[in-house]
Every structure is written in C-alpha cells, then in structure tokens.
Length: 131
Image 1: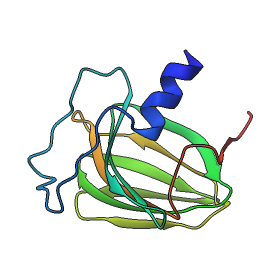
Image 2: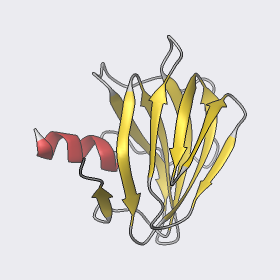
Image 3: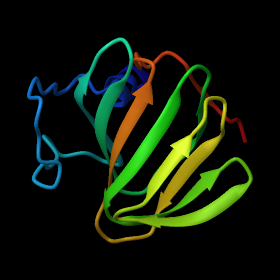
Image 4: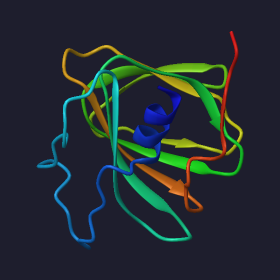
C-alpha cells in the first residue's frame, strides 16, 4: 500500500509533454479514493502537478522544496505551520521548505489544485508529522 501511495504522490500516472494545457478542462485520469496526483510537466528546476483531494492531506513538510499551490476548484481548510485559513478557487498559497502543512476538504466536490514544486520533485523529501 505504501508503494502505491508513493506512486500516486509522485504522479507517475500521467505526464503531459504539451507546453500549453487547459487546467479547467483537465479531469482525473482514473477513479481514486482520496488523493490523485497527475504530473503535468517539469525539469530539474521545478515539477508541476494537478492534485485532486476528496478528504484530507495529512500533515507533512518538504525538506528541500518550496511548494506553490493555486486552487482551481473546491474548498477546504488549509493548515500552514500554526496558521489555519479557508481556501477556494483562485487562492494562491506559498509553502516554504520545512513548513508543516495539511488540508481538509470542506466542499462536496474534490479540491483541485495546481502544485508547483521547486526544485524538481522526485518524491523523496516528504516528512510526515507523527501524532
């Protein structure tokens, strides 16, 4: 199960070579239980993903990456270090490296975000907070 989750997180299911993509028209490539990650581009400087979340993303941080999120649709409560705020379509969140963050979806539709991680994200610097 951990291997399958890792595959979802690093977005190996799909890679778009297009230089132009309409994110509003992009829909999940498959059925998913909670989180689906689709890689849409990247190089050694950054990696871009579209992420759908139905329920929650548990608290974690990235040791070497800054993550920028742009909310495309859905709503949720975002936790960033000791802050808590609501997010929805059009919101932009910057998550500096080593910042603890999580999200709880509050809309009936999944939260859909564009995630840009810099430098290139290979899935090996995520650290989870133990409760």
